[in-house]
Image (tube, protein in one colour):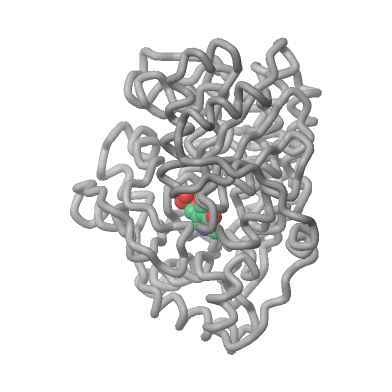
Length: 434
Ligand SMILES: *Cc1c(COP(=O)(O)O)cnc(C)c1O
C-alpha cells in the first residue's frame, strides 16, 4: 500500500515513511492510496469473530502487503489487549466503551498500534528511533505507555511543569525503562516549539532517527477503525440501520469510522458531536470551514479550534460538500447540556458517563429524536469517568471509583528531569543522554 499526501496526490510514500514521518514534507496528511472493501464473507461471519481476529483482518486488508503476516498478527494482538464493551444504556442506545486500555482513554488504541509498528521498523535498522512528544497531558501518557518496553525505541516526553494534572503527570513520569519525562519550566506551547525546532535541527537529525507521535500519524488512524467493526459485530442483529455518534475534537476517531465504512461496514450515519468548539457542525450548516481559537470546556480533550483531521475527511469525499454532508450530521452542546445529560443518565439508567461520552450521547439522542427511525444507536465513550473525576463527582454528587490501573500509577514515585524552556538546554540534554 502506498500513502499519498492530502496536499499532493502525486507525493507517495511507503508505509515505513508514512509512519516515521507522520506529516508529509508538504504538510499534508497521509492517506491510503486505495481503500480495500472487505469480502461479504467477512461480514457474514463477523459476529463469531474475536476483537483481535476482526482487527487483524481489517489491518491485513489495508497494510498486509507491507509487513509479514506473522508480524502484523503480533502487532494487532499487542494493540488489542483489552476489550471495547458495547453496553446497552437504554432502548437502542449503546455505549461503546473505548476506555479499558492502560491510560483509560480511546487514544490507547492508536498509540499502541503506532508504537508496535515503529518498533517493527526500528528492528530493521541500526539506529534506534527516538520519539519526541510534547504534551499538555493525555497524549503523553497514551504514547509513553504505548512505547513502554518496545525494543529499538526511546520516548522523550516534554510537558509544562505544574500545568498537567497529578494523574496525568504520573502516567508518564513513573514508567522508567525507555521513557524519559522532561519537565519544562514554561507552557505547552514552549514544549511544542522545542520539539518542532529539534526536527529542523540538522545537528540532531543527522545523529538521531527522530520522529513524532502526533495524532495525525496514519498509524494512529488505522486502529481507530477496528472498534467500529467490533461494535457492529456485537449488535443483536444486523437488520436495522446503525448510527454512530462520536465525541470529536481533532476528528481522528470519526475519520477512523469513515474509513471503516469505506471498507464496507454498513453504517447509516455518523454524528459529529462536539462541545462549543463547533467548527465542523458549523461547516455542515454553512459550507464554510472557519477555524478559530479554542474555548475551554469540561470535555477538554475536544477543545480544538482547528481540527487536524478535517482535511482527511474532505479528502475521503474528494472535497465534495454534499457527499460529506450526506454521511455526517453535526451537533454541538454546551457544558450545561452535557452535565444535564450526565445527571439524567445516572439517575435513570445508573450509568456514569464522562463529559466526552455525554456529548456523544446527546448527539445520538438528538439525531434519533429528529429522525423517527428504528435504528441501533451507538455512542463512543472515549474516557473512563475517573479520568475526569472532579467534574464527574461534582456533576453527579457522587464519588467515582478510581480503577486499579490508575491507582498503580499514583503509587509510584515521579521521576522527571527539570529543564528550562530554552531550546539549547533541550538540545544539550539530548546530546548528553542519548
Ligand atoms: C482525544 C479525545 C477525544 C477527541 O478525539 P478526536 O479523535 O481528536 O476527535 C474525545 N474524547 C477523549 C476522552 C479524548 O481523549
